[in-house]
Image (tube, rainbow, N blue to C red; front, side):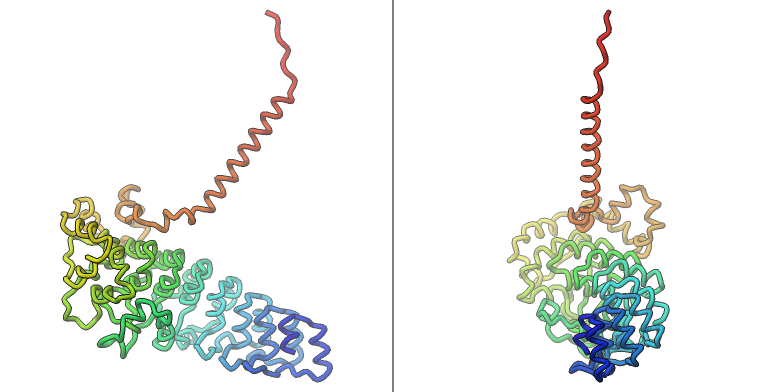
Length: 408
């Protein structure tokens, strides 16, 4: 039964049903044939099984419902049929996920449109995770735009249970930061959708979230409680992502506020970890583009002196910052982050001033050639079209009868 449902073979399925096949028989994972058919998007199989009495709200051992499986497949016809036959869109899985989360993560836009008005806010609150998180982690900008347009909170935080699932098991810098001190270990901070997107390296999603006023200076202290906002920890190797955050108001100055007495982990202590110390030169050099004159502590200095970027860092620290640089920082401070991220306000500035204030010359993502491939393709098509027109024009000119010479 399960194999026939997986393959979408209605003839075999009907043969099995006529010979005593049970529509609600579960396999080792607790899934029914209906769940398998829903997972693979076989509408005709779902229709047969439901008409033969299959339970539309059955759940597997992991709590995943038939509708959740259908949401993952993206077949809107299957989803509508299940809903019309009593499927509950507010059944949680064991991990707290709803069908709306599965649709957002998989990027199934049509399925998401169906599920948004049917999913209770209470069910999402009990899930402890917004579908905005799911769309951000899946990297689906279209689904994210839909969710934001429908009023979902861009700064919604995961509950503690789900945040715990985002401990960095790849043994990266966040993992090696060691046991958190004070409040960080006992009471983990909730995870925002922005951090999910940064962690996944989703540039376009990060830009969308920032444009929707996501908090770039949020904290996530599940593993380490730091003085500086968490997002930097997820992009130490990614200058493009780092500058995207810094250009949008990340507080770079917090990385140089060291008193060595506070409980939260300071930047110098964090960068002294052997697994990331080699990145310190490039990271600090990038941060210096976004701060006034700063002093580095002895701990950070010892790390930086071993890096190839040290001479350049040393020159920047010893030299007076340019008036242009200081003016930009002062303007950004006086405008505040809220106004900087308001297009209605920034649109009033002359283009060159706007570009200067928003650090557009340091926006590596916008300058990345890969992000202009569509534009380049359009230009190539246009050039090819022009060549064809020119070639046809030359051919017509060669084929047309020559005008007779007139006698003088």
